[in-house]
Amino acid sequence: MQERERDGDLGRDDAAAHCGRMPLPMGSIFLCAVLSFGFVPFYHSERLRCFKHKEQTLIEQMVEQMGMADSEIRRRKALLLLGIEEAALLANCRAFIELQIEDIVAEFYRIQMSDPEISGLIGDADTLRRLHAAQRNYVIDLFSGSTDQKYVNNRLRIGIVHKQIGVEPKLYLAAVKTLKDILFKALARSVADSATLEKTCQALDKLLYFDMTLVFDTYTRSLVNEIEAEKERVEIYAASLELQVAERTRQLEEKVSQLETALSVVKKLEGVIPICGVCKKIRDDKESWQQLEQYISEHSEALFSHGLCPDCYEKEMRGIRALRDAKLAK
Image (cartoon, rainbow, N blue to C red):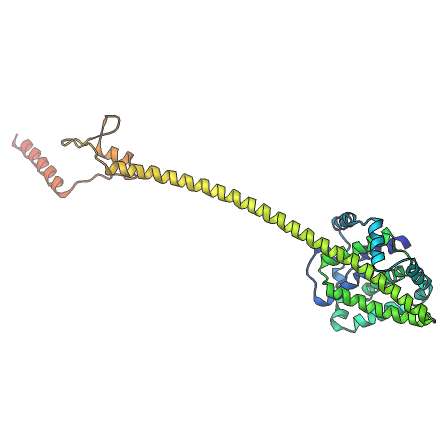
């Protein structure tokens, strides 16, 4: 159980509305900043739920991708002058911190709960209890005297979740400052020798900076991943546009072809059309003669509706009357 808590799994199992990656209110984001202290963010109790297996897998994969070699860990500690002496100083204070851990955590949350918005976001006592437990684990871990690969991976994991839920760096740094001030006061109550106290506070300051470098690495890597993902999305979209343009071009070419065919028919009808002066039949390209109506219908969209004009009507009626008179004369 202790190993599970030290690795941060307790916090990850207990919280997790952020697995949906939704934007958070300002107060909630501020509270999420303490993620770097070993626990995950929280919302109203009714929105609290366990991490999805998929989200856990993605986080662990990213931690694995960002895994640091021992040489890089040593290099970072050397840059901060964080060595064996600092680890020993912090480890020597673990017993003092464990005795004061409840007061330390209570003070931290007293400051958080003094804001009405943050207090409302915490929700209920059960949520607050889980946060207290995770905070205790993180603080005690600072005084374990160990900054091995497991420690580093846990900090990377915390940073990844930070970025996923949208915690701004300025809020994260403010939370670090709050915790550091509280821990300095706790050390001052326990370490009588002023020289030792100063060195211990410096050691803690270096360790918190070490944690911050790891967390900000995850911010940078996450941003790079987002840029690469966006680039891939744009490339896919561009390829899709090319396909759409190609399809649209093909459709336009078909329309052009249809228009050219229609225009060729119109031009043919506008040209010289050989027509019989008596029967009005038209000679086509195959040297056959067609009725006028048939030819025009085949070479255009025109249709014919037959009737009689006034002159033809009168002519036909005279003929009919002449036939009738002829029959009556007989």
